[in-house]
Length: 112
Length: 113
Image (tube, rainbow over all chains, first blue to last red; front, side, top):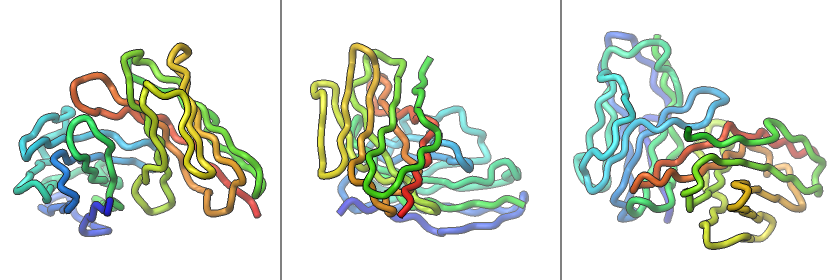
């Protein structure tokens, strides 16, 4: 089973809202990732967690706040976003670092 | 810098034809090269990957070749089917101690019946 699940599938939020994206995997993977993908572009890495600790932050604005409550869950908390943050947000996981990454279906976010 | 060139950006073939997508990468220390297929409205799906100690890998209709000297790797799809229509991304891993993937710009493959 190579499944990464993400909720919600779609999210519309205003610039003053606070929302969270959720990602879950039950493959025993110890590394989890957040990516942002704009239309017709490749995914761009945002954050990497390894063994529930933040390993990489790719200079992402503080209005994006990741959280890894346990080895199966990864959250992305959103606050005071801008319209240009509208994109597909992808979660991925891998057995460790470095290993093959498996992606979830993504959350399509629209910021109004 | 860290980048990978991917060509072509779009590729249209007839069902049953072969399709080839090529990538050139910049980091000579890279040792892992995955290919992802992304259908409309979905996340990228790993379809095949290759490590630097191997020159070619095949999985049914899909094959990947790697030329480390020239820093090229290619995806070959034979006997294409309409369900192969998607965007394909190549990627390579930067040698940073963890697997940061650098993605190509993508190839939109359209297979016509």
